[in-house]
Image (cartoon, rainbow, N blue to C red; front, side, top):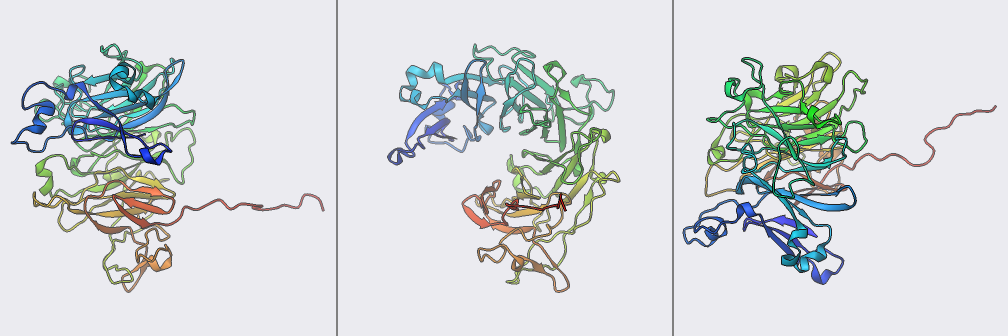
Length: 492
């Protein structure tokens, strides 16, 4: 099966079985109860309104995972509706044959819904739920997501953790069926009362919200130990979920791990990796690199925003805590005058070393399109020792919605130009030394290429990178050589 939401309000299931004659046939369609309305001008009725103008319904990518309910394994689909509403839903899609009689089997397919009516701190569900096995002593599987945007609660950013096999009775009990971890710090008085907050982390007049989280299994035992997510005020938060007691799951450090320059928002899911050169020694745990950019494309005014955005690689080093800013990072800058073999200008970055041993916490660089509108609003991807990500520059003309962006690839450890060519710059189908760039005095590797249209996150199939429907060749991953690697004479 292939599942996809549509702006008609439905989550659709399409046949992708081995029978080619059935490929693409719709097998299932589900509309969440919180999207349904019998009122004229609301719900699906509005789609037939002669005066219809665009309104979001169901356009979040669903998450699917196998989970264990205590006696059997099942496959669950969990999704929100992004700008379509304040709610998420879960479906049991273990057995697609049940879709042959959806009305008769609805109670076996639909598991639950969780909405703003259950908790007003849930906003528009732009945060994609992540599914995994928790460290809770009862072995519960959970869905973890940010509270999204424009909630009707206290206006703060929150991390939600829902027990997947609770809520089926339609009743959600806080601190039992689900947990809500606040992501804010009261700098004025140090307490946890949102009503006395004055640190700019969100309130009823200026609502904050948490974006999609990234989860980390630090000890390799298959459970979620840590989560990272950014908010609309430019703060990247780290959450400690390592305890077997859910009551001990908490915001780590009591402050943001990192705050972006000028508090530019973080709206995309970050990407994680182990530090590429520093070994975990127990004191520097979790020893995780967090990669993310700043930028927003949510409201009409974002189309013409010229706030400078940046991309960051931040080292979460536990013994040094949080509170990291750009002053703690090494900046990379763009080298001038570099062109490819065809004479076309390309992006090249400096390779300033990062003094991790001396206390530097990572690297950053700006997104410098001359329009001033460049931003990072999709998830980066770590591939080998390179971080790939795409940027977007919206067209300031509302009648020309495509825009353009840049495909970027930087060194994981420094954020600078990689040592070896990464892109097939000259488009000859081979990534080699001919894909380097020169400014007449020096030669370097290319970190950025311009591409028309909206650029979603890259998807890799072996050495082909797909950005939307555009394939491009990238460097092959290094492989471990086979056969005898070395020998030693034991007896003479």
